[in-house]
Structures are given as C-alpha cells and as structure tokens.
Image 1: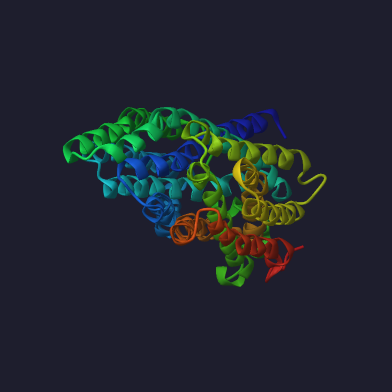
Image 2 (image 1 turned 135 degrees about the vertical axis):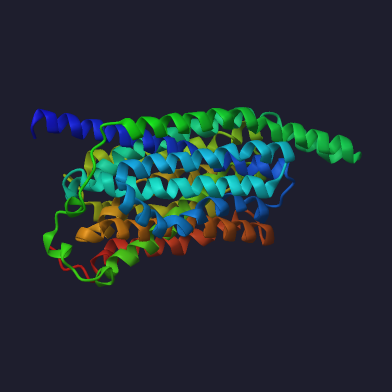
Length: 420
C-alpha cells in the first residue's frame, strides 16, 4: 500500500470511527431514557419500552429509502444528511420536555432513528469494503470499540443528570396528593433533559458540516464488492443467505437492546439503588468493548468470523441461563456479561451476509438495516412479559434468539452462496 493510499485509508477509518462514536453515544442513551421517562411521564414497563420501539422501528421504515438516498447522494453526503436528521430528532426533545409529552419524546426518538438508518446503511458497508473481505470483521470491531466506548460514556454522563435522586423523587411522588404539586415535581424532572440535548444537537450539526467538507473518499458502485462473479447476478433474491442474515441481525439487535437497555430497570427491580444501577449499562458495554478487542486480536488470523459467531451464540445461551437461575447482583452480572456474547455478532453477521453481493451491496445493506427493527419489537415483548410475570422471568425470550444466531453461524450463512 502506497503512503498516500495508506494515509487516506487511516483518515477514512478515523472519520468513520467518529460517526460510530456519535451514533453509539445516542443509541445507548435509551437505557437511561427508559427509567427517566418512566418516572417523568408515569409509565408502566410496557409503555416505557416504546422508547426502544420508536427508536429502532425507524430503521425498518427508512432502510429501503436510505439505499435510494445513498444511490443519489453517495456515501459522504448521505452521512451528513443522516446527522442533520438526527439533530432534528434531538431538538424535538426540548418542546417534549417543556410539555412533558411522551408522544413528542417518541417522535424525537423516531426521527433520530431515521437519521441513524441513513448513517448505518452508508457506514457499515463502507467499512466492509475499505479493505479485504476476510478482515472486515476486524475493521468493524475497531469501529465497535469507538461505538461502545461512547456507549459507556453516555449513560454515565446523562444518568448523572437525568437520574440524580430519582429514587427520592419516586418516593416523594407516592406521598404527594395535591395534583398541582405533583405536576410541578414531574415538570421539573422532565426539564432536566433540555440542556444535554441542546449540546447534543449542536454537536450533530457541527459533525455534519465536518463530514460534508472532509476528504472522505467516495466508493464507486463497481468497487463495493470484489467478488466479480456475483457482481453480475441478475437479482438480489439469488442470495438467500442475505435474508437469513437480516433475520440474524433482527434477533441480535433485539437481545442486545434488551440486555443493555433493561439492565438499569432490572437492577432497581431487584432492589439495587438507582445510584448503583445507573452504571449497569456502562458495565454491559465494558464487556462488549473487551469482546471487540478479542475480535481485533483473534480474527481472522486465529479464528474465523464464523467461529467467533458460533462462540458468541453459545455464550449468549449460557449467560441467559445464568440471568434466569441466579439472583441479586449475580443475576445482573450475567446480564451485563451478555455484552461479551454480543460483541462479535454484528461484526461477523455483516460480512457473512454481504459477501458476493457486488452491485447489490447497498441494497443488501438496506435489508440488514431493516433487521435492526428487532431492537423495536423484542424489547417491547420483554416489557409486556415483564408486566405479566416479572422482569427476570421475561428474559427467557432471548434464548430462541441465540439459537437462531447459532444456526446462522453454523449453516445459515452458506445457504445459496456459490463463492469459495
């Protein structure tokens, strides 16, 4: 690799890493928003998980339009556009907080998700095609470190603001009988979110401008995948492994969101004070970062991305059984350890699903982005089960998800693939 080409490669990875950091920061705020909005808007478990539904269902809605947008704008302009859309979503939190309007909060989350769908559709295949296919999982793992590092920081920063003394506020609400005093207390709680989201909006707009004027290279349609045999395939429907991969993404994102976004509420359900529980999401992401480093070190030189996905699927089942069969902080620890199981799933499923797509890479990426809707559907099911049984028993919903991911790792990624 020539020096200029190497510098361009490093610059591209750095800029894309910044994007992964930003949407990691925003995505993993949901774990803090769920208990915050549950208190501020007085919601039950099922209602509170509409936070994840509104955020992740937008990926399903926007996935196909995203590929059309990127076809017209190219990767770089598309990334900038996605950041602007996210800024529109974050600014909606200001009137939502002033009115303590849950529907408007959800509209803001949905709009943020629309912008992220454009970003994800562009960024993930971009990382995949920046270098050799066999090392794609390693590059995505590097991006994952940036993503999850942001995810570790965002709950700590926002939780210290939004969840401060929230246990005391909940106790106070139980004793307040005057409706005016009760509403005043809830309004003051809701308005805690205004200043952080003003800062977030400004950050997104600045980054959108920086990406727009950056030297980030465009990628030609023909260069998106080196597999020339598949580049001439007549239809994307001739790649069934892609659609099996989209289902794997559905289950993976669903269990990742359940584990990461429910862990604070689960800790408080077990009687752990919110002052301790507010750090549990960061603990989950700490395990994920550790897993990413293992992925960077081990794939593809020591183990293949297929083998890594098999190991992660098995770990997911084992740790979920641990959550279900233990109690107290031990059960919380098993739930956090699922971050380790989840770490290599996204980096492995993407290249295993996009291999050999050639000119269909952007469209294939859009189908995988649609799979992110698992983060909308499965947490809502978990919340519904939690209201009808309890928040611990409801975690059984994750076991069949890991079984499917294991199937994809063993044989699903080979269905219909005619490459080497």
